[in-house]
Image (tube, rainbow, N blue to C red):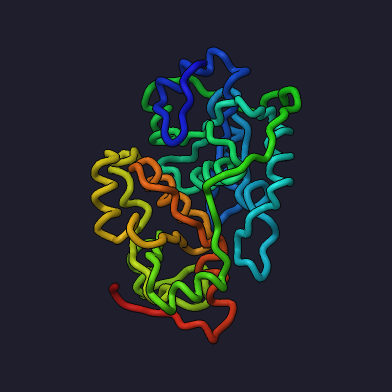
Length: 284
């Protein structure tokens, strides 16, 4: 396969690539925050042929602690996990979940963060695959040969909570909140003990990156949307509840032609661990 995908790929193109499975590795990232076993159970029932399961809590995060609900795994641990699933430096990785990529974008970001740029999200996820009438399989495929992926330099960066405190205080950066508007405004908060948003942050619900079918909006439209938020002008840092759906905004920004914003991994789940940090409510 000569074409390399770095942001998005359609179901038809992935299906054609799977005719040469040694060059492609697919990961199913379905996950339900309120039922940690549901996505894996659904995977065992039916998934894209050859796909392996990537569990948000077990594979794409470290143990929760003072870094928030979904801290990053150590880069060496993540690379070792990728190798165990047969990923080499030239492997094309494709990630998907149920639909719009809310969870799969986290794995896309992790590969990019580890310097593996040949990774793309399946447009429309498993729903698009089913709609195309493409085959599914059950069970777990045989593990491939051990891969030889290496940790390489990357332009994808993170920001510590100390950096975000400074950026929020001086207002010099564009902090972008990926949660839905009601959570941003503090009208509800199902996961954190305090509702609201980091002061000076702007709201960009990640669902706004996609159309009703779960496919990403045109790059030009996304670029216009992000310019309206101030992204691409000042330093941009994306966050959400725990550093997962923020990756969706980063993917959308890269797809729109922007430099990748930084990720505040701890997000609101880390911010509110210290009740001396202010939390804003209401519209921007």
